[in-house]
Image (cartoon, rainbow, N blue to C red; front, side, top):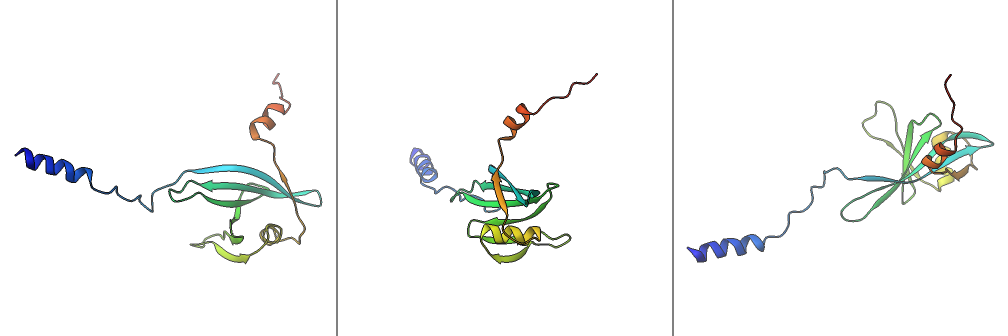
Length: 133
């Protein structure tokens, strides 16, 4: 009886761990924000993000318009995609430099200006506060 118990314990110890569920949600971290402008006019925001995948981190750029709506995204290889209303998938635009891909999404001609945004907390702390009377 003890032998069967020991064999069962050994068998349980030798089993390989189950692979991670490929459809399981992954944490996403924001690494930075950049203001995209042209000729002094703010077009929107470029948000650098990273998906914490078990195999390796996956970096991409989310592109927002000035109202904060998602226009599309670009991956680390320079492939640009546009989100389209009522479409089941985003539309592949092609492989471009950041300047050219952003110009396509914003529907303007390059060159564009891309500037890092200050940390939100620091920006809010330094903003003047209104007092209510």
